[in-house]
Image (cartoon, rainbow, N blue to C red; front, side, top):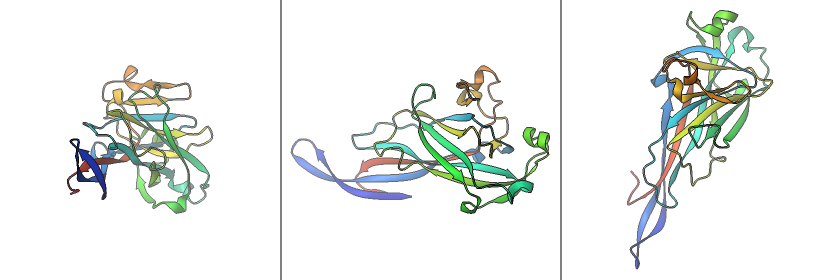
Length: 227
């Protein structure tokens, strides 16, 4: 989606040139392009974060970029879906850094009400760890969207590496879809309630399962015209 606004920029010292502030919203990451759904799991009081990258280049004053939305794949066992309460809370955090211990995140918390989202039934693979323990291979799933437009300011973010984290409160265990164990552990931080740890310190280089995320970024740049 592309929007444009007209603004005046000073060129040289004595004349003005009319430039357009081009606001471009684009898909930045879709886990289904790099992996497949493997499991559904929810961990009360835990957080699971993924390091993302954005080559921002050079931005002039009043230009910038930011995360504007995150989608996460929520999961509820099929047998439980009709009686599942509309009181499950799940938060998404965005950190303007590659280390979650170095900065304070922007947070959007959401109570997941079933009627707000489009659910579809699916069957998890036979080797799903959590489903194998519980027998809950048949699941209802929905992509739940978190809007960060009001949290992250228009002037945007600064780090070329940033973190997106799913966070359960102490009483919520709503399931989240997890990818196959084929993604980088050095980009996966997990907090089981005692602080974030980088998973490459305890696992192999590419044996981690990431939460099923989709991300959308916004860039703001001045140009002669907006394509």
